[in-house]
Image (cartoon, rainbow, N blue to C red; front, side):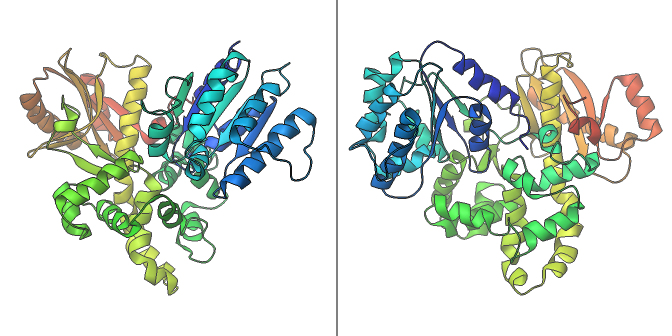
Amino acid sequence: MFIDREAELAQLSHLYASDRAELFILYGRRRVGKTELLRAFSADKPHIFFIATLSSDAEQLAGFSQQVYGFSHGSAPDGFTFPTWEAAFRALAEVPLQTKPIIILDEFTYLISGNKAIPSILQKVWDEILKDIPVMMVLCGSYIGMMETEVLGYRAPLYGRRTASNLLQPLDLPDAALFYPLYTPQDQFLAWAVLGGMPYYLRTFSDQYDLTTNIRQHILDPHTGALFNEPRLLLMEELREPRNYFSILRAIAQGRTRLSEITQASGVGTVNSVARYLDILQQMRLITRRVPASENQPEKSKKGLYQIDDHFLRFWFRYVHPNQGQFDLGLTDSIFEGRILPDLDHFASAAFEEAAQGFVAHLAQQGQLTFLPERIGGWWDRDAEIDVVAFSHAEKTALVGECKWSKHPLGTNILNALKTKAQVMTARTGIETVRYALFARSGFTPALEELAKAEGVGLYHVEEMVRAGRW
């Protein structure tokens, strides 16, 4: 089952349809679906699909040589290999060109790790031969930092050669919900709140079973759970000193979001050393430093809060990692019933705010706001906190919203409280016109619906957020 990625497939198809050579760079976190996207795109086209591994450089060259020779000649003799990577890349100019061939080098960073010269060798062959023939080459990698420095960076040998690139993002809520057509919108949201937008994780759950069964079976079971050790294995492969990073991620998952709080809770070292670890986690797109949406210079703001981006990592470091010993002792039921289930709605509330911010962005894209926002996020200072804010400093207008992942319908008191917080915000930001919106799990009271209609307040149910753009 391949879901969505319509924009990404359209981008690839547009490049393929050109009459020139294309060098496309695709990168993104592991499990985000890069390989599946490329398989779906290339399935009905002539292609070489080479997936690099952690084997030796000689073995990588032999494997690539077999595919290149086999593509041109139908099969390759046992043990055949080109003498050098340059010879192998030059051989790409000899593949049949009646129809534009696609050459995919997946896990390209593994090739670089085994042979630092490969980008320079490819750049030489590209400049001398490949750029002048109708071929589409795709370089794909999971180590975001290495792709950005060794392939896309200004000092990289291949700098200036790419014709397009894409940092593949996790699926948003409406697309993730498509994995579970049998679930209610509330359970579709909760599955996304737990697993995030990584297709690999989303495929692990089945809507033939309820959400709690999926969590217990696939995340919490140390013996059969496919996701029980997933973050540990991935991060240990990608990080030096994984113990320190684990301590930092656990601290953030437990609600320590300021640098000083993370430093104290993690016990890793000084504020400066923790800041360096946080910078690396940001480069890996594992965490984000959030600032109020009204900040004009986010990088200089002193109000920054750190957040784990990936929902599943957030869940794992909040519930699995701290209780690893108890799971190993067979206490899964006790941990789930006593620690996870009572806290699950609170855990999901952060994802609900993210979903609401994404939904406001969707409204803006559809032209359904009365202004063009410059930034969308949250807003806070020492006196007030607002879940959703869409700012336009140019128009001195903002939309402010409150999110409640509550089992009870929202009443007029929620709107009144939001108006009070908005007064604090407008006094601090210079905003003159404010629009209001409320986002609810369980709907709204008749009194609030009547008041909202009279005042033009937007009321949005989780079902609308799940189905955004999918009606």
